[in-house]
Image 1: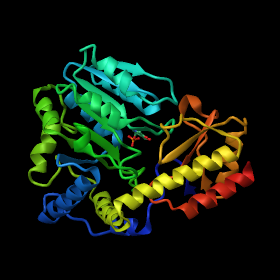
Image 2 (image 1 turned 135 degrees about the vertical axis):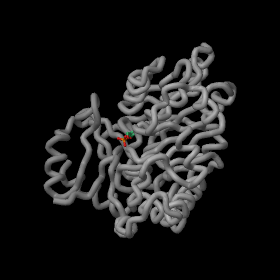
Image 3 (image 1 turned 60 degrees about the horizontal axis):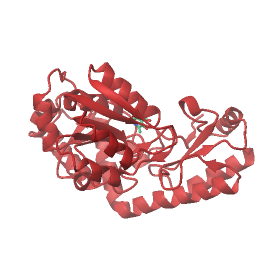
Image 4 (image 1 turned 120 degrees about the vertical axis):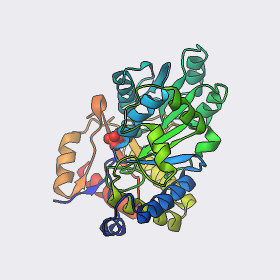
Amino acid sequence: MTKKLFIPGPVDVAPEVFTAMTQPMIGHRMKEYAELHRRVTTNLKRVMQTGQRVFLSTSSAFGAMEGAVRNLVKGRCANFCNGAFSDKWHEVTRRCGKEADAVKVPWGQPITAELVAETLATGNYDSVTMIHNETSTGVLSPLPEIATVLKNYPDVVFIVDTVSSMSAMPIAVDELGIDCCIFGVQKAFALPPGLAVFSASEKAIERARTVEHRGYYFDFLEFVANDDKDNTPSTPCISLIYGLDCQLQRFFSEGLEARWARHRSMAEHTRNWVQERGFELFAPEGARSVTLTSVENSRGVDLAAIKNRLGEQGYAFDDGYGTIKGKTFRIAHMGDMQQAQLDEFLAVLDGEL
Ligand SMILES: Cc1ncc(COP(=O)(O)O)c(C=O)c1O
């Protein structure tokens, strides 16, 4: 049975986007591809509020996240960790042979500017990774405050995962001073999985020039050389890029500010719904995601049973991630989801509760 997706990615994809993906194939070294590539990267820069180079990576987000640490960590990296994906990024950094420390806060808590300031004051680090919106816990860390701290450290490369936040809220990459901003397209962008996007500042590119063993597939300098020709180092997922081209037009038709407001409003609605049902919100006030709501299972309901029953009715429900599975559940309201769809899901969930 096809299920409506209320999980935090992948999410439902609009029929127009699927149709755009069925356009006839072109060669990636043909001028038609260069035109498509330029249009898409130009429009992505508008969404990301950046004049930096923006690259298309035929991989899921973790491909570009691995590429970022491989290219940008020269000395020692501080991996800020507050959930499953940030913990994994630390593991990936170490597996790439880099020196790195996991700077951890408990799952459910945000990374704070104070913690970043304290960590960088040690003088031990030339690079930082953090996840803006930890999808495993529904926690949004205060990126603007953290970015202000980073501005005191011009030699530190600032690498940020915006996998489940980019396009759902304003993220001004240049103003924030993010050197490498990464996201996959199957969450807030509401495309099928298989494509990641990342930006690189001049500082990041200069750093990559001095780092050895960057490999090939995610070598930032290969991306730069190909970007000069509106192209990619390897054959890209052209069908997905057609879909992204269409989706970016849909973003602009809705209006970016309207898109941000829609997510804010659905998040507020969901938080109220949760509290009215006698559950606690997992993330503290001020650090709650706008694309998913993570709920503490304070009523001790049988989440696995609810997931099964919702599945039988055609709804995909998430009963928590990793070590907090069963103790929390997540309601996603990301991508192109509209209030009416969320209402439909919450009504069904109400029935099961
Ligand atoms: C915040 C965040 N970062 C990274 C990832 C990993 O993305 P992928 O599985 O597409 O590599 C996810 C996936 O859920 C995520 O939510």
